Length: 227
Image 1: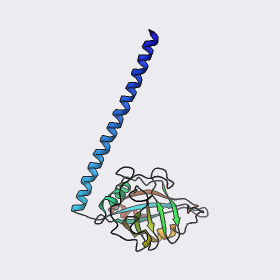
Image 2 (image 1 turned 135 degrees about the vertical axis):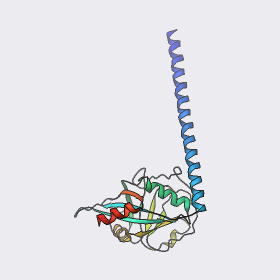
Image 3 (image 1 turned 180 degrees about the vertical axis):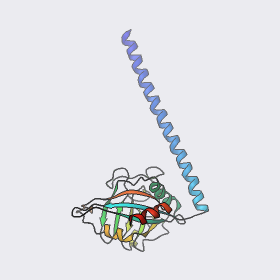
Image 4 (image 1 turned 120 degrees about the vertical axis):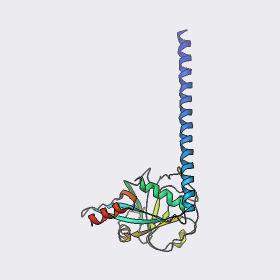
């Protein structure tokens, strides 16, 4: 009898566990759906009254020989052309999701790449819409230095990873979504582009984003004070 009671208790326990997992999954899906609906509404508003926004990245450049350097770059996000893609980067910056994330790939004369907020090594990334989201459009071309574009692993695999061009790169047109441009601090990006790297284009010295946010009067005052 005691054995039977034990078996029944065990079965009930397993059943309860399955129910709790299902409930948790259902709640997660419900929250994800609400989040998607919220961002869909925001993007629709962006389309109705597009206004480009400016964000900044504070970057520390580690150096074995001299003191570490902290620099700031300002980026205009093209809400007027690619509101969904711009919104993704804007929200990630505003919530400081890029803090501690490295530029993991640097190719001199071509581009600097970073933004892996999950694995920090270029193998991961996550968007505000879920893991990945589709290519919005390819209206903007890689026709100058300083352009901010989505890094991906093929069509419709955008996450949080991005790159900044160091030169015109027309071979990327139609494959990567351009969604912003460095408007201040491009000299720092060029400098990052000269960082020594290994055979896999990984910098030998850390180049890390330490803070990000939206450009405001406070951000301007802080920059002037630091300068």
